[in-house]
Structures are given as C-alpha cells and as structure tokens.
Length: 333
Image (cartoon, rainbow, N blue to C red; front, side):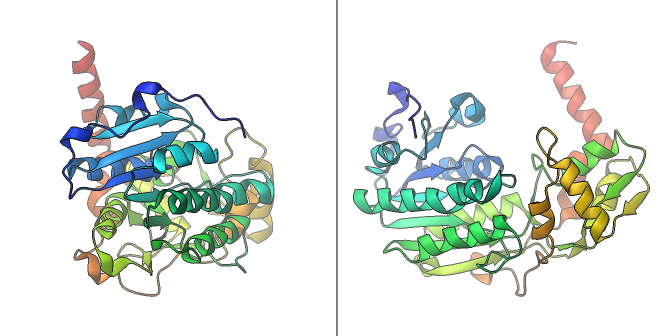
C-alpha cells in the first residue's frame, strides 16, 4: 500500500528528555478511536511516552495536546512506517477494530493482516511486550466474518514470540460510543424503534474499565500470556438496551422486535446505506451472545462499572442541557 507522508516534527518519540527511564515508550495503532482516546490519556497521565499512528492526524486532534504524546500521520499498514516507530518502543498496543467491512478481505486486513505486520515490526525492533484487543466470542467457527477475523488476529499474536496479553471485551459503552448513543440518536428522529436481533444478549463493559485494564497490563508481568474476557456487571437483551437508552434520554418510543427473517431483510437493506447502521455480518455476530462466562478479572483490583451508574451523565436531558450551556458560554452567547 502507498504510505501517507509523515510530519517530520512528529516522527520521533515525544519529549524524550522528560521521560523517566522507568516509564514505557508505547506504540499504538488504533489509538485515535473510541477506546484509544481513553488508553492514550491514561498512559500520558502516568508519564509514559506514546506514539499514535493514524491515517489522518486531524482526526486525532483530541490527543495532540496531551503531554508525552505524538500523533504521527502515516499508513499503519505500511511495514516501513511500523518499523520506523517501533524502533525505541518498549511496548505496543493494537486497538484496531472495524464493525463494517466489504467482504472477508476487509475484516481480515484490519483484524489479522495488521497484527501480522505489527508483530513483525515489534520482533525486528526488539519490542517484546504487546497488548492486543480482540472481541468476546471470537473463534474460528464463529457465525460472522467479524468474529472469525478477530480470532485469526488473536492467533497471530498468541502464536508469536512476543510477551502478549489479549483482551476480549463485550460491546463497549461510554460517552463517545456508537452503540448506546446510536439508539438515542435514532430515537430522537423516529416515532417507533424497529429492532433487528432484539433478543441478542450483551454484557456491555465501560470504556474506562477497558482502558484501565489495558494500561495496568503493561506494567504487570502476571498478565503475560493471558487472555481476559471483559464484561460489565449486568446482562441485557438488545431490546433492553434500546429501551433503557431511550428512557434515560427522555425520548421513550414503542419498540417493535423483528423476527429472524425480517431482521435479515432489514440488515440487507441497511448495509447499502452510507455509513451502514447494521449489516448482515453484524446480525450474524449477534447470533452468539456477547456474555462473559466468568467474573471480571480479579487481578485488576476493581469491580466493573454499571451502565446505569454513568450513562445518565451524558444521556439524561439535564446533562444535554448542561452541555449546551457550556457551548454557549465558550462561544460568548
């Protein structure tokens, strides 16, 4: 693939003179996304040097002002780019994940081929430590290409000579998510919610908890060679989650659950829309419950955050009004 030009002033590890020898130098791919922004912020707050590779630097502008963080504009699928920035790193984190892709090749490129390139770059550069984020339910015999490709990526990492840790979260929620917030956005526009896969079960986990585990793993050798399933404290059907999100946001709507055949038809239609909300592969992923069969890993020393404990902070009408007031103050209105 053709590499994207890098900015010379961001091509080196940031603020070298300020990084203590005991701190990590962490290379992150997928660091500009939803989970990445939380991981990067925690690493920076702890004084670690972080380099984030992204195709478009402006999309990671929320990270640029963080101390000890460099945002590098480059193609993460280019071995030369990975090699250049793996040099000098002490650890690497892979957070790349795509929910929508055109065919098997798209999923495998993001979830399997990229880990291969990252692992190779780490080995060549002498980087021993890697943390890889997969997905709950990933397996070679999973019903969806998404889950099968995630399993393939896991095998790349766990079959390598690196000191690896793998996290397998259920669906992740948080202020900037595209899951709970999507239901609310649709509910504010539609008189009724027609829900495909309404009986699918999830055990959603808070993004802050996932980020805390990832950062903690880097500093704990006990996590080397381990896979951790990450889930929140409660299990919901998809219909339950839609109902809760709309009620919390003050825009309750009637919910019409679709049967299997109607769900497939809806997904087939919606996947052709720009920025698809639902695809047939998404629907196939929901055939496997995204539920943990174990407790939250006790090694990390905290209990997972309940959806109900934090979602009102950004979904509730009062929170929305408060946010608009802040915007008005900042703009002088």
